[in-house]
Length: 349
Image (cartoon, rainbow, N blue to C red; front, side, top):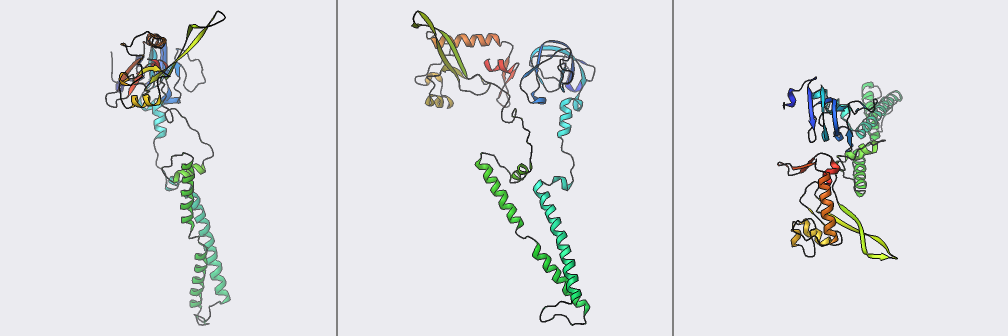
């Protein structure tokens, strides 16, 4: 029977099969060719074989465990629920990624922190200059010419000395610092853009300049963790090409086009016929049978008389038979095609 995921509790037994999403963290009790895709946890799109006993006891994700939100790409199995909700591995990751309340100092970027340190240093120097300058001016009885204070008026002399110390401190403050910082950030953004970097904020230059080690993962960021068949190469015996009685092999190249991920609405053509102009026509939605000089080798109405047509039909038929456990379906809301099963087989399906 099927129950809502929210009703699962530790100790329940769960049966999973190809195409299912694991509803909780589950310990495997029985497995039949069970494989899962754990890219949501590890970033690796490679399928992981599951077994009743863990093959690597020191692994962070042992093979006798199924984890919530991972996909079952092959086989089936039965397991016992050991964690649900935020207690699962995905839930713990979500808790760590949840933004916490930070103080004002922690919200500052490295450049702002450096400017704050510089401001503190300048403020300390200004305080020292004011103190030393005012004290020295007062003790020496220094006045401008003509004198602003009578010789016996100490309070006037003290006020004049304080103003003189403030003027000396103001002269120390670098008033052009904000302009210099803005110009340097702009120059850094321009240099990064010239190297094909996408700069959305000038503060990104600051963060990149303060980084000493950058750890990144391309899966899900630069790539989608999906595959698609692009080229079919076939080797067959060519009886017309013989030298000294030996039969040589002939090489044929066929291309799948257009490539739209897992969208099956494409076909297969001879690579020599798929020119730039014909590719552009197919990209614009022109049916393959209306493109001059292009033969749709995947069409069931196309005559199977040429070597390319026989190669295309035999290869596609063999791929469909070998990948019969994979299902492709279209997401009605987004229009994207998704695969249920092994991603390598989905590319051929």
